[in-house]
Length: 280
Ligand SMILES: NC(=O)c1ccc[n+]([C@@H]2O[C@H](COP(=O)([O-])OP(=O)(O)OC[C@H]3O[C@@H](n4cnc5c(N)ncnc54)[C@H](OP(=O)(O)O)[C@@H]3O)[C@@H](O)[C@H]2O)c1
View 1 (cartoon, rainbow, N blue to C red):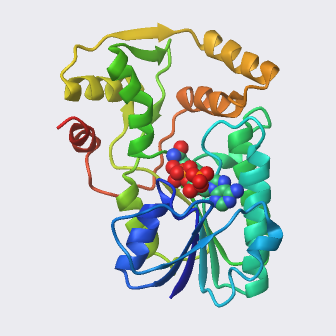
View 2: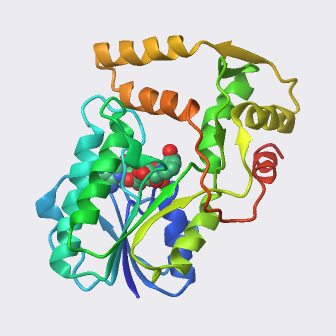
């Protein structure tokens, strides 16, 4: 099949790209920046999903469009509304005009519950709604989180020698390995239209996960407990000062206080194996 992958050089995008190429599809990898990968067999295109004119014709001749486009780092002048909602909407408009057979969107777990005070999740919720209401056949994936998200969270703590956990937070999560998730997406390109939650086969608390990181690094575990109120104030301050960090702080606060456990499970790679691979 002819597949356009947008956000193809992101952390997860490049795993989708790898899986799609390995499965023999004819792939166009589009992203804001084309980054080097350790394999070939695809064509590239530089895009900015905010530039509607520049996107013209991008989906022409494609069977499937997969969007991994998202704003995942704090930004002072760009909002989640700009990229996650408007940007993906521009891409969807092209997919509609080209008459693609399917638009696959990588969203976030529990996006349908998003409130406006959680702009990162809310923008994804808005785009999901737009996609569902469009005439384009869709498949929305809502992963709980990725192994590498946990690495981004806990590795800096390991380096500092102190873990930081929310006081009283007992939230659980079953994260997925991105390579296994990407393989699943490509193996299920023809799955029925709908919204699919995605989680890994192991469920842990953040304390259990933090402990695994410290143990793998061979460092004695030491956790500091942060009151939830502190994080609330931090989020509020970031919003007041317009530092650009408010959406990611609001999302993190929400994620740490809500169970992110999908009943639909994929993959077989243990989280501990991944963590140990980071500390050879
Ligand atoms: N990692 C997570 O936190 C997590 C967990 C569960 C689900 N997800 C879902 O998976 C998606 C991707 O996650 P990821 O970890 O792969 O994030 P990522 O590495 O940041 O990938 C997002 C991609 O979108 C691209 N992009 C951003 N703005 C763009 C624009 N204006 N035009 C074109 N491309 C643009 C980014 O390019 P640049 O890097 O050059 O900006 C990047 O390649 C997220 O949006 C989210 O919905 C993420």
